[in-house]
Length: 210
Image (cartoon, rainbow, N blue to C red; front, side, top):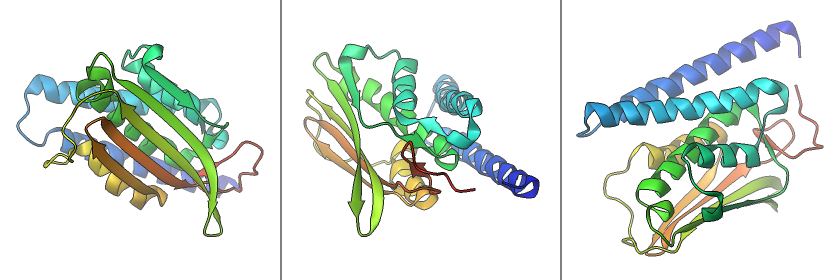
């Protein structure tokens, strides 16, 4: 990659990061919320971005390992490893997708801690992914499945920042096709994201195009 292209890419990433930060600050302040809750939400979301940035800085051109990113966010919420399972083939997340994916995983983990699998004694979480070939393209299919609880089997009437991120931001930013399903046993989130060399996701061994 030439110096001009590298500088242009860096500027674009900085603009995207600040746009994401503005959205975090704005959405964290919406609704009836105390100053302490606002500060806690803001700190948690910025912390998720900081952890992802630390991973990304090790080798920016190689992206971030998906398993490490997922484990890191669950550990940051102090979730015991016996309460969840993370399984999938070696997969790296392209640098353009690292921040929004880190934030999505953070929102899911916090929701599971407060309202979902980790908020009940018998709750459990399975995070799995695989690569699929559909419609002439390769995709990464990630499934976040909570189970072992009893909750209302219908979506919330007031969609928060996390749900909007998964249903609107990721499809817009990453070309994702996401579905969120609600059942009495727990929430189920399916993410279908492009997985091609040079795209936002790729598999180890694929050539990352400049």
